Length: 379
Image (tube, rainbow, N blue to C red; front, side, top):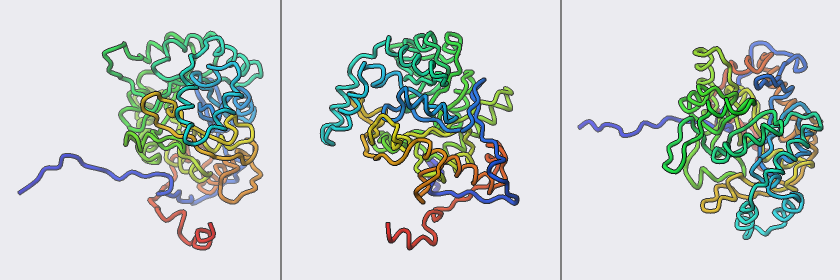
């Protein structure tokens, strides 16, 4: 008797399960171009700090811009709900583990103050930094005009999962072509993990796509909802959508792999899988300049009914510049991410990020353990 299959599962891969194959030629790292572009903005490093309250405040956004990257300010977070955000951040850091979730739910129940949106954006702009801001789809129609009027440079629409089509009985969903007409800013949308969802988002005319559901260190979406795709597979699938959209439209829409990064090797693998840039949260929460005071929490942690994040203690390790550029004082790959990327690309003979997309990758679950008995036994 032949039994038909109800579902066919495919194998998917995360950072620890793959490796990059060295190239047939090598290139000096200092000859490599790692520029990242969003419309008319060009960044000298393809690294973005996430729109999380423990990572990005006004000062951090300014510093990240000065170092050549981009940081995204959460317009629905503590910076726009409180006149005294430093005091609130310190309160979160002091909260006992057993009390932190209800404490966060109470803190984030305060209303967003629209005047603070303009003040925070203007503070970033006055420094000469590029200002990127983030909102959830549900608040986009209300807050996008305020951000545009305050002269934000890049607008990010972000939630755990964002699609080009949303069905609701209670309101008319967010229509991205209409949003593009209403505000004169490049719009990045996220998050997604599939070829079809990514392609549909690109066809709306947006300027970039965030890739990743649930991999972040402070995110519990995968445990709470069971939803997500490992980052290497998600990036490869969305890169295929980007290339398909380029073929059909002539527009190149970059993809940004968002979340799950711990070390330089993870960053390098994301680019080999097809990323144009990466978005990092928990590693940057460890920077001395980060506002979270050694703690980090997920954007969905304060949800009033179904939290999908947790507060984690990440500690404070080093200045942001050292995390990005070194010199590294550790041997585990958690510092000098830019140096790691340049060296990996040089090892593969890739002169540009686009050439890095073409390097060979292999399935290699033993890549971090093979021959490492002494390191593992002493850890």
